[in-house]
Length: 66
Image (cartoon, rainbow, N blue to C red):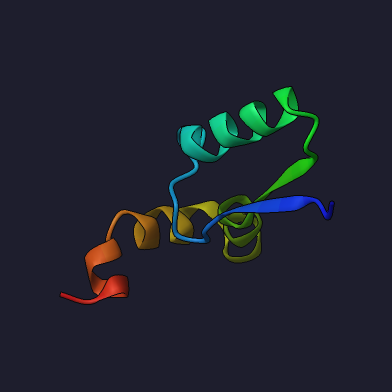
């Protein structure tokens, strides 16, 4: 079986863990199914800087639409 990749999207906050995908990874692991988590939010914050990232991630209504 191919590994499963869970993605934490770029505009998710970096101030707390992504519990949903972390729990899913744990459950799959208990069933010997390999999975990984990719935290695009952390990678994006590193690319644009934490100050701009915080500004953008706190105003998701302007990013996601009305």
